[in-house]
Image (cartoon, rainbow, N blue to C red):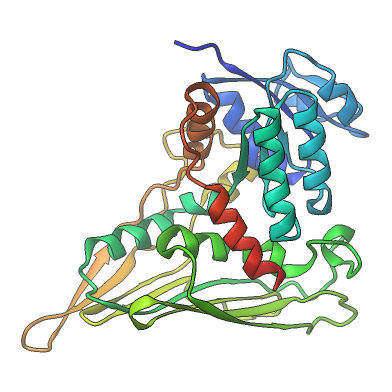
Length: 338
């Protein structure tokens, strides 16, 4: 068995605390050695053996660290990922990987030049709802797909405190790069690159400099239409997943519990982790030969972000293809930057 991958985190804000440290800590294929904490030193309260570095340079100068998780503000992802690879580290980069498709190409080219793996963290591929939708689509029970609708609704009227998301002159800003990266990646994971697309954005919050609403219409072969929508002033949350085919429909709310569980301190090795409470099943409606509706409740899959880190391990140690491919990210940025 290969040695655990010695790993460092560039930041310990929400992303580091919730989406990365718990998984590296509980996965025996990794060893969480160090985290950058510039001011408050909180990581040791949960991870007493951790080294808390004051700067990214200190982290990158640690020769034992093989993998660095780049979870700094999104406008710095490209710069920090290149810096980490030049220091001899593989990188797992929070979305969005960069601001443009051209930058993404440069990022992956640099990885090949330095012989380092570039992996992009797209955790929503492993939400319970998306896994359920994927299974229903792949079963073929809906017939020929006509329409797919993915949404992520929020109501946050106030301008957020993270300036890199809310300032118009900062690259990769606004809701398109934040939640849009999730919805576009979900679509690409299922259907690949669209034949064409239309994109609409809007600014509705008082004082906002950046888009807080978007809508994509993606067109695929065989007349498949995919609609992706998100807004920060949606008072009544809509179903997160709707799929309509020639033989039936599937509807599922966004009820994945992983983020809430992790925020409350649950570790991914807890048996209850990722399991949605009863009552959150998806609704599958199939038309029979007599044109009557047959309704089924589809149990939710267990959400499992750990699959990302299992894939990271196989990529770093076995040179396996990472499931979020370079092409996927390039196509994603084509849409986000348009």
